[in-house]
Amino acid sequence: RSSYIYTLRSVAGSILDMPSPNFAASFDRAAVQQMTDVIGWVAGKGKEFNILNAPIIYPNLKVNAKKVFRNWLVIAKFIKVAIGGKMSIYSKSGRSGGPNPYSKLWKLKGCTPGLIACGVTALIFILSPDQQFPGSGIGTMSSIPYSTVFRTVKRFFVTQWNHARVQDIVKNMNNYIFEDVDKTSRDISHNVDDTGEDLSDSLDRVMACLDDDDSSESDDENRIAAP
Image (tube, rainbow, N blue to C red; front, side, top):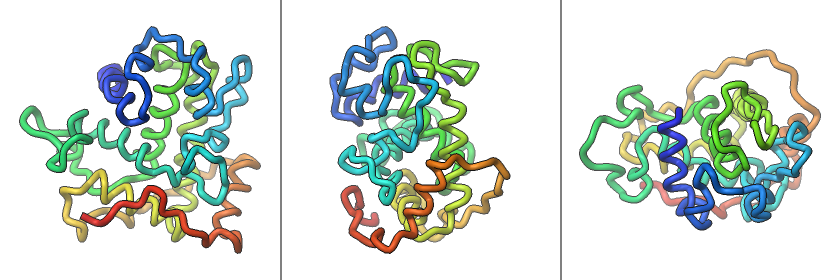
């Protein structure tokens, strides 16, 4: 895990278009409003952190329940670094030399709710004031409940996996992350299990908005052409 976090810190600046030094573990991110604003973190209220209110998961950093997780490219880049190494986001071929990436070792063919949840959780952590990922699941400096962030994101994708708008997000992620995998073999129909966990009110509202009559507007800000 520490190796993955170190790798993410080394490329986060280019992914998020922010100064690279800002992502050093010892950097005081709590003092940089741009960084706290994009994740919706407020000092002293970390325990109340709600991933669904984090602007970074929305296009143009504008919270809109109809467009939840549609800032998919940023999330996908974090996932791609995790399973393909930091050079995977810089070249079409993904990487060259070195050991096999985890995507091959684990025989991954497509995103799963858990993989997406990992990417989102890592994204929030990298932008947070925390210096080390907490074994307890609660940020030492931020008080952000990372375990809850993970569960909420996974729960969302588990319950909404077959929704057309969610499938569109997943397909875009797969086109980017698994560009070297034959499209016909991508595991877009991965079976997911309902964990039976209770949903928060905010999660209920977001999922309801996916089916809202007004949700058919174009959300192509981050769409990429199929390879």
